[in-house]
Length: 292
Image 1: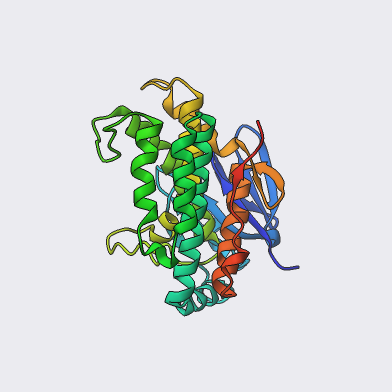
Image 2: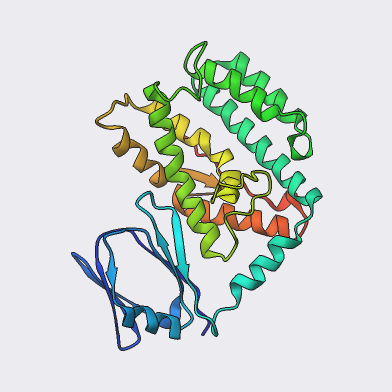
């Protein structure tokens, strides 16, 4: 039986291997058959495991991804002999043409602008929402005319007030938004890394010092979900982390069904891979707001 599960460890625990099972010792003990695990993501820095456990996991071909304190992938352990998926994924990633990347980025920007318009419609700022929707219709491959940037300026000013600047680190609203964005970005980064693709190689973002270029590409259509969360609550310095952490549990829609955002992200990321690998941007399935 081929391994098929991506197992994410989010809470403080101790991991052991006993009788071909991974044993998760926390408040409740859980066991997972090693042969079912394709990727193990350690998303809590307070999780401990022995070298013997790591060796046994590698014997079963399990890829282990370690995350930092912000839940972003920091490094990984890949067995030399049993695990071939990273090489296959890298070959695919390097084969993506500039034309295909540009068309997928066009689809991503359109999706982002459309969802920004939905946030404004909820706030009943329909005139700006209509203008942003018109920008969405004008997006060219690789967003050559920067409809994303034009939309962002009027979007945030309509969302908050004239003169609002996303680069102003002294504005606490930016602190709250950035925290929410980072939570979604880390979930996307984990989904990308667990599939064997390199986070550094983006389709549009190409920063040489950015370890998460690919994740920064894919997070763009999901930023409005954080913006909507911001509008739903009276945030302050004491509660914003609590509320923003809940964004991954919000109910959303994808491909005609409802799901919680963390699960929908996994599906969304896979459709982006499929679109890039098959040179067919129409295969992208974007997450949308569910009915309230």
